[in-house]
Amino acid sequence: MAVAQPRCGARTKVGGRCRRLAVSGTSRCSLHQGPWSAYGAEQEKIRQAKAKMKKLRNR
Ligand SMILES: [Zn+2]
Image 1 (cartoon, rainbow, N blue to C red):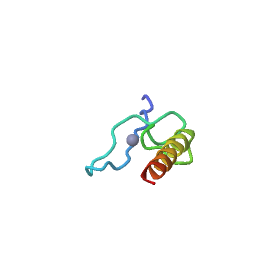
Image 2: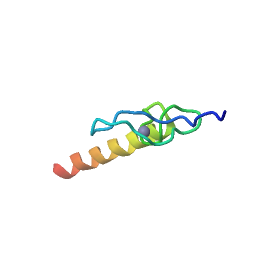
Image 3: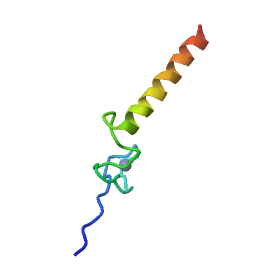
């Protein structure tokens, strides 16, 4: 029997389950990986940079 490809299974905003396949080596898809992953860290960095820009612009 073939090993089932792991699914992300993270909760989505609409209350369902994420049906994307998990990234190999992790238990979450690229969208739902936490901040501990390289992908998550990068996204967080971008978000913070954007927030900073917004702050500067509002001044
Ligand atoms: Zn997911």
